[in-house]
Amino acid sequence: MRAKAQSTALRWLTSSFNHSRSLHSLPFATIAVEGMSGSQPVEVCNLVQGKWEGSSSWNWFVDPLNGEPFIKVVDVQETGIKPFVESLSKCPKYGLHNPLSNQERYLMFGDITAKAAHMLAQPEVSDFFTRLIQRVCPKSYKQALGEVYVSWKFLENFSGDQVRFLARSFGVPGDHLNQQTHGFRWPYGPVRPIPCGNYHSLHFSIGDSYVAIDGGTLYGQQTRP
Image (cartoon, rainbow, N blue to C red):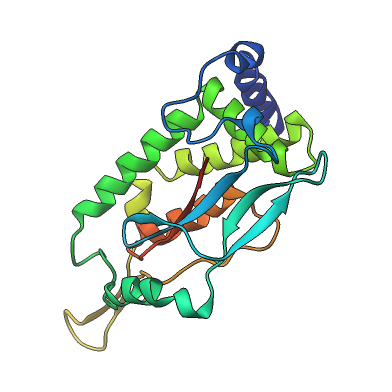
């Protein structure tokens, strides 16, 4: 049944494939997938302290179609980690929110994930990310679309009240009348997910989402022309 449901969803996502390719760039897109090339390289920058930052040092990714360098990714050296350390130090040990403080942020991230899932379910948006994955990975359109589908379903599953459920507490009876022990779960201070090497940007965003909705500090990357 699950496989049938997934197949139905994938067919729905591809229903307007040909139409979406003719659309202009999406409002949030900083690049055109077909425009990425050795003659028109793009940059991947870091998000630190709320700003997109470049670097004096870059790593180049080669175009899998012709071997030309076409994506340069910021390469942070030891001498350039100070902004990241300063940002981490601003996150207290109890996080930016937890079950005892700033609980309204659980509602905020519930809304964020719901809106992100709704956006990723739009055929033109899923097509954009599918082709973006294909541009750097040797996958068929259907395989790449499956990666987008997994990310969409993650965001959908962790929308609304599901965010606060990640911080569900537990209670243990004590030795005496009215004595109980309550435990709460949230990240201890500033944390950062370290994904495996075959993670693409959408799977990386899943790790980021876990950190953010549990109250941690997060960093990100942006691709720009």
